[in-house]
Amino acid sequence: MHLRADSVSLTHFLPPPPPPHRFHFLAPKSCTLRKTSLRCSLSKPLPAEVSRTIMELSSVGTLSTITQDHWPLGVGVRFAVDLEGTPVLCLNQSSSVDSKSSLHVQLEQCGLRRTQCTILGDLGKPDDRMDLKRLHSVWKERFGEDVDEDLIYFIAVKRVLQKEDIMEDGAWVLSSDYRRASPDPLRDFAEKIVNEINAEKMEDVLRFSNIFVDMDFQVSEAKMIWVDRLGFDMRLCFPQKGVFEVRIPFPGEVTDEKGVKSTFNCMSQLAWEREKHYDFPDFEKIKQLKPIAQGVL
Image (tube, rainbow, N blue to C red; front, side, top):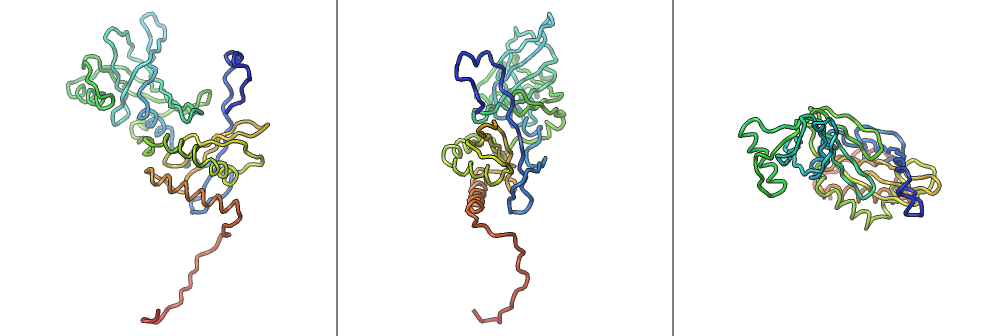
């Protein structure tokens, strides 16, 4: 959605477009969603969780090592991860590898964003037979194939750099936080939900930007980028203003596909009522109850 030159030949010589502007929407803890521009750190997963999600959903990355003549070398590799997010690789014996390595992994989201993480750690082989068998099982479960156990390596994670997109600042994650984090529970069907909403509920997506986001200009195009247990990200385009991203949190955490769809429908209904001015103003619950004599209907 970035503005581009009309001539295809020129785009190869243009610098990469700047990342979209970001602003944030905060839903209060009550069930009533309000239009605001406040930012809340708990409205989105932490970088450690995002990194674990990227590694779970991906199986191809770039392994970088230092060659014997001290040149950095990056090669494409397949990988799997164990329960703590440790990358497991199958490398040819003739590969010249250095213990200090990095594994860079990107996850494309809706064709609009490449969220990514880079694992820094020591590349090595399992110390004992039990670890070797375990890592071999991790590989076989991920790819459905047996490999020569002599070719199995793993990366002992030291720290992780997580970035929301290309050309954006990243956040460093401690190895302990990375291992303790859990991948997002919606990861296996997040892309499916995003594609369905963008294809079938574009009117609702546009309404969200007008009702839930505090802004003073009209949106010409809106698209959902990704969804997770705490909310979803949207890409907004404004004539003469540029491209923006916005984070819209759910009223509460969701953990399955049914919960996502139910929550989205609830938010869509609320946005429609706000747009049509059908919603009720804030009110207090009625506290006085009139007793009824027993036996009287």
